[in-house]
Length: 132
Image (cartoon, rainbow, N blue to C red; front, side, top):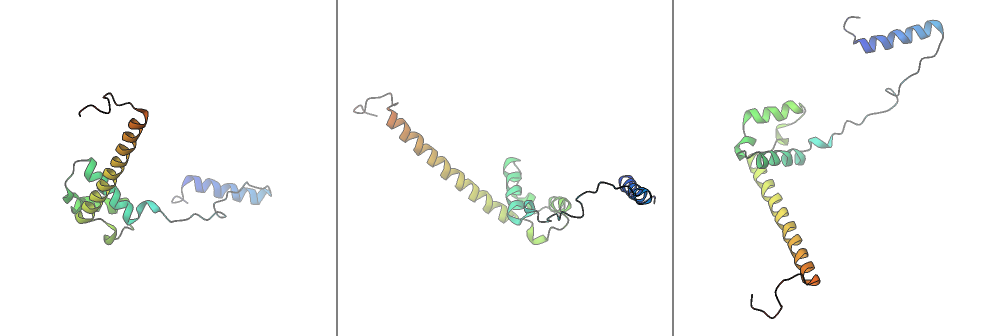
């Protein structure tokens, strides 16, 4: 019984005592509720995106994605990770490029909207016929 955790041992003793005395013990839903083991955080796309954020925000080189120590850290966080799920420096560079293109496109859209608002509200400080 020394290998059984104390919490589990106490539960087992309470169940034994309840059987002996005939009283009822409140049960838990541990055996009734099925837990799903799907963890979407560790998909290949999410790992690539997070490594890209690490490289871009941490001012790291793209070679960090190929380093054995960094890859071992990723595997240590989730031992079920396959080698094919880990991003290469090429995958990180492509993801970084795509995220930059998305950000620039949204920035352009925001600038267009703010320019239209300024024209509609006539916030411009110069007359429309004056040279610019």
